[in-house]
Image (cartoon, rainbow, N blue to C red; front, side, top):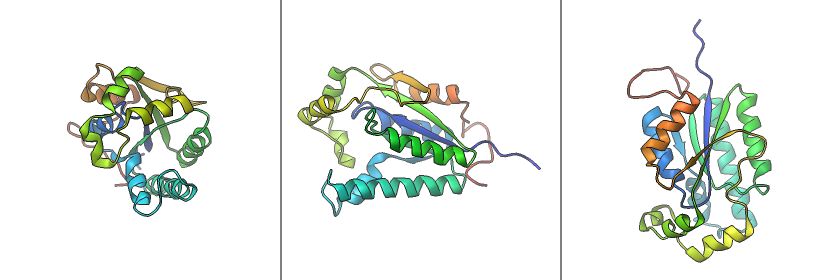
Length: 194
């Protein structure tokens, strides 16, 4: 009997405007992994509950957990994006890691970063409106003051990529190479539960 490759969750994290979704889309195209980005759950819940309120965060957390839990159960390789605030999000990331690893899977941590100046420049880009992303320099600056958005995930090794001058395609290829992820276009492989 043939053994299937180990299930993977690629967790791409970093501050707003660092390029998480753009890199994740490139990685999804390259690997064939499913993409679940953080704004999907935010938009769903924000349709009824005000952003940042306790019921808002409670539901966002539930939706994210159920999606990832079900993907793990169904053996679906997934890419997930997250704005990670060191210390504030440690418990959530640890529970996510436990969930994946308890099912025999692996979490591949990818930290994207660049300078604060570059992020403040990028945050006002019009393309960020599509998913209701943060577009205010003042709000981003306020986040810098309240949270550590540049730290590595606690208790895990992360591949760190500076997106200042790195194209999304190059970043995706670097992630795939580092973690030994497949190239969907060149080699057929049994994955996603099939």
